[in-house]
Amino acid sequence: MTYLKKSLVALGLFLFSFPMLPEAYGQGSVLYYSKVDTLKFGSRFNFRSNIIDWVTLSPNLGIEFTLGNKNWHKWTLGAFGRVNWRTNMKENTYHVYDIYDGRLELRKYWHGAGTRRVFYWGVYAGAGKFDIKISDIGRRGNSFFLGGMIGTTNELYSYKNGASLDLDLAVYAGAVMAKYDEYRRTLQGDKYIYNVTWPGTGYKLTFDPWVYAATTDIAHVSLVYHFGTKVSNRYKKREFIDDEYRLKLANDQYRADTLKAADQERQKLLRIKKAREKKLAEYAKADKEAAEAAEAELKKLREDTLRAEKLERKEQRALEKAKRKEQKELEKKQKAEAKAAQKAAAEAEKENSQQATDDNGKLSKEERKKQRELEKARKKEQKELEKAQKAAKKSGGTVNETPSDVKTDKAELKRQRELEKARKKEQKELEKAQKAAQKAAGNINSNKKDESEALKKAEKEERQRQRELEKARLKEQKELEKKQKAEAKAAEKAARKAEADEKKKREK
Image (tube, rainbow, N blue to C red; front, side, top):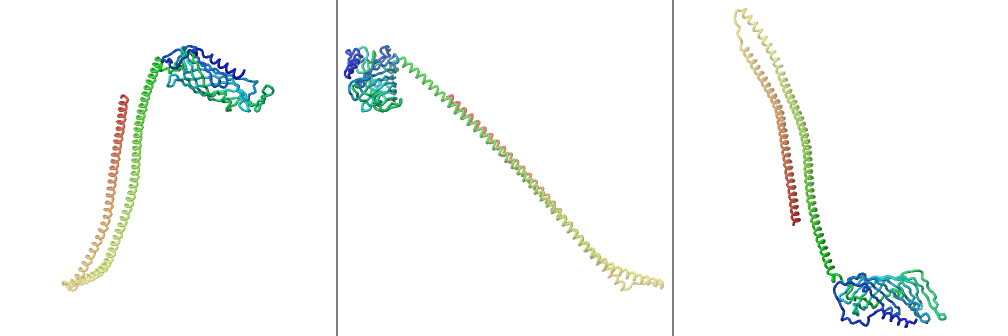
C-alpha cells in the first residue's frame, strides 16, 4: 500500500467517525446553561485524533471517558493509539518512519474566563515500537514512556443534538526508556538488508532527538468530538451551578468558621489561662523569692547577730581577761607598792628606830656616864654630908650648905632638863616618822580602793553598754520582722488584686 492510498483511507475513516457533520452550524447558536445536568453514559465519551500524526501519515485515534455522570465532574480517563509499520517495503526510499504505540491518559479540566474554552493538565504512560531512519544511521527498538501534559480545548462547532467539535492544543513532556539497535540499511536485489552497527544493551533513559520526539509525541493538535453535551456545558464549577452543593459548602464553611471561631476562642481562653497561670506562677515565684529573701535576710541577720554576739562575747571575754589581767597587774603593782611602802616604812621605821635607838643609846650612855659620875659625886657628897652631919652631931651643931654646892646642884638639874628635852624631841620625830609611814600605807590603801571603785564603775558601764546593744538588736529585729510582715502583706494584696483583675478580664 502506497503512502497516498493509506492517507486517503485514513482520511475517509476520520470523516466517517464524525456523523451528522452536515447538520453542524456556527458558534453563534451555542446553548449555554448554569445548572446541574446528568450526563448519559453515551454522552460521557469523546473521540479525538492528532492532526500532526496524520501529516506524518500515522493514523491515530483516541477515546476519552468522563469519570462521573454530572456536568461538574472534571476528571477523565482516556486511551490513545497510532500505527504506521512496515510501509513501502518495495520502494527504494532513503527515509524510514515506522511506529506504533499506545498510551493511557488521566486529565483534569477546568473552565477559564470564557465558556467555550477549557484548560487541562494530566499524566500519561505507554509503550510502543519504532523504526526511524532520517540520516545514514537508523534506530530500531522498543520503548516505555511516561510524563505529563498541559493544554486547552476550544469549542469550534456545536450540533443540534448538543454534541460539539472541538480543537485540542497540548504539549507533552516526559521520560523515555528505550532499547534499540543502530543500523545501516543496504539494498540487495529488491529488499533492504539491515546491518547492525551498535547493538542495544538494554532499556535505558534516552534523549535521542528523533526517538524522543517520535515516542513522546511532543506536540498535539487534535480534533475532538464530544457526544451529547458540548464542552461549554461540561467541567463546570459545582459551586456555581449546584444550589444544594453551594448550600452544603456554605454550611460547611459556616461550620468550619464556627469551629474556627470556637477554636480561636478556646485558644484565646487557653492563652488567657496560660497567662494567668504564668502570672500566678510569677506571683508565687515572687512571693517565694521574697520569702526566701526575707528568710535569707533573717538568717543573715541571725547569723550577723550571733556573730556580733559571739564577737561581743569574745570582746567581753577579752575585756574581762584584760580587766582581770589589769586587775592582777594592779593588785600585783599595789602589792608591790604596798610591800615597797611597807618595806620603805619598815626601813624608815627601822632607820628611825635605829637612829632613835642610836641616839637614845648614845644619850643614855652619856647620861649613864654622867649619872654615874653624878651618882658617884652625889654619893661622895652624900658621904661627905653624912660625914659632916655625923661630925656635926658629934659636935652638937647643924651643918649648912655652901654656895658651891648649891651651884653644882643647879647645873645638874639644868643638864637633866636638857637631856629630857632632847629625848622628848627625838621621841616626837620618831612618832612623826611613824605617822608618815602610816599615812603612806593609808594612801596606798586609798589608791587601791579608788582603783577597785573605778573597776566596778567600768564593769557597770560595760553591763550598761551590753544592755543597750541587746536593746538595739531587739529593736532592729522587731523592725525587720515588721518590714517582712509589711512586704508579705503587700505581696498578698498585689496577688489578690492581680487575681481579681484576671477574674474581671475572664468574666469580661
